[in-house]
Length: 435
Image 1 (tube, one colour):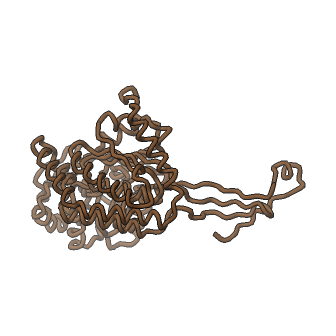
Image 2 (cartoon, rainbow, N blue to C red; image 1 turned 45 degrees about the horizontal axis):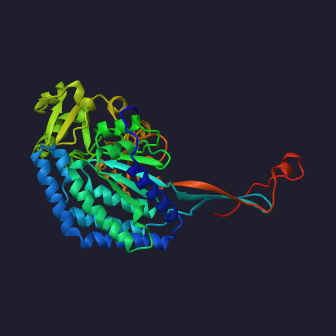
Image 3 (cartoon, helix red, strand yellow; image 1 turned 30 degrees about the vertical axis):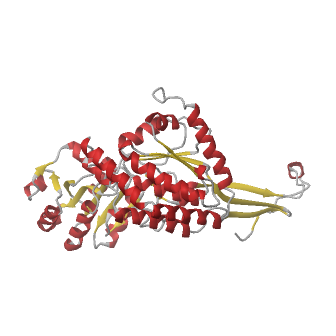
């Protein structure tokens, strides 16, 4: 962690303020937090034009600096995208309260009752690149779950992020929740030093490039929720419906190629390769997708030869690697070797083959006959997502409110002491009660 600077006095002061506000926020009731979110959405609506103007400034500057097309796509915030983000804030307000949910209710003995109850994490630190809509998503989920948040966006979205944060804090100021519950960091030094705030920040959520996520994972003692790669696969089985497979494959790649849930490799069973590629090649061409294939797929019309590097590349662009395989086992072997355990898909009309694939592929999302683009918290009905986790331990996959809460054991007694159970004068009953 030698490359991570010590936090400045100003950063420590700001983080401490967020921490204090988070303590109070965690004690608000469901209605107060919902009211705060509606006020945030109202403030975003009132300031929509200034937010869009700030985004146009960011886009102009980033284009002049040669920002990659994939990042430019993520940076752009138009009327439709902003309206959807504001609607997302309102939808989060209507979600069930994640706090105070009793997960366990057990009588240990007469008058000695144990509960396990959901509570906020405390403070989350979020570092992201070129995603101004992420500010609204993360902030709304943080407030709904009773957490404070320190947010650091990429410099390419600086003006947009500042305009959005001003609106969010204005909304909080008009609500029962302190505006100090949210804070925006604007310097690279601040984002790096955030990684050292293990006494003030409970979770780091990186949303950005492979390099960003890996750097954060390697340079903090704070738990990290996220994924470094989104190398998603789609396997066209021998028993696939060709027309259906073409539609799903094209959508999985081209609907939003800059997203981490877009497929990067297309695996095709050798026995269906000729009819499938005959239909798929013009469809991919019409969508502007450049294909890079193994020798057999090139022989069937794929224009460019793939290299070994292509099988493990997250393009985030209209580029797709294509490989023919002998059978389902060969497909799952390839996914295990090159995949990132994000989202992988099988297209088949054979239910048994689908079940084998769903059981064999150890990814956060494993799909049958549908687009990989459904790997999204909003589409899962979570209201929004704080990120996607590909780790084995929970939370896993698109993470919504449930990833921002932990639990606390509460034990209520009537003067009970452990010595009575140690000497046998009392015994545990361990009777589960209704939740």
